[in-house]
Length: 182
Image 1 (cartoon, rainbow, N blue to C red):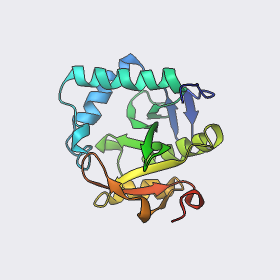
Image 2: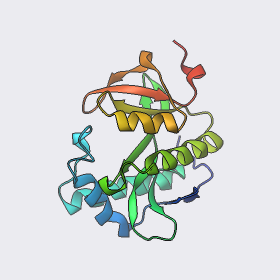
Image 3: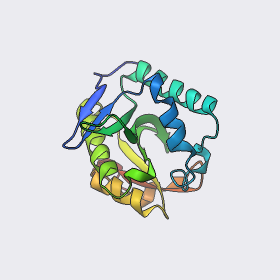
């Protein structure tokens, strides 16, 4: 789909702001994605150079231009410092077009419910603005914290959809399990 949906360049929750990434966020993209802990379960996402972060930002920005949504930068109300990223991107799962829910936060933001709160906001936005495209999350078996975030955002495990991913076997969580009945 190359048509843009209604954009939501900014979302708000009780504690968080989510906004479209800007070029000024490239250093934060590098900081979060160069931390070995944040990419432990997805090592192919690890960045080591500023140029890689810039390329990633450009891909994110292109998606926003094409679709009117993408990955949001996440921070706390009243604070300028970014906590991480959460958003959706189109992809295919078993030959069907889906939106993949993504969340990655700095380790300093872990354990405070920020990822679940941001993922819930993005899931709510996707259900309202892209209801015809199923929402999924790909999670590694060992990544229990990420499984909890997907569940907090309203997604349910769909074992029959599990599949090989970039960095290992993906457990699939879905927002509308009835659409994916085995």
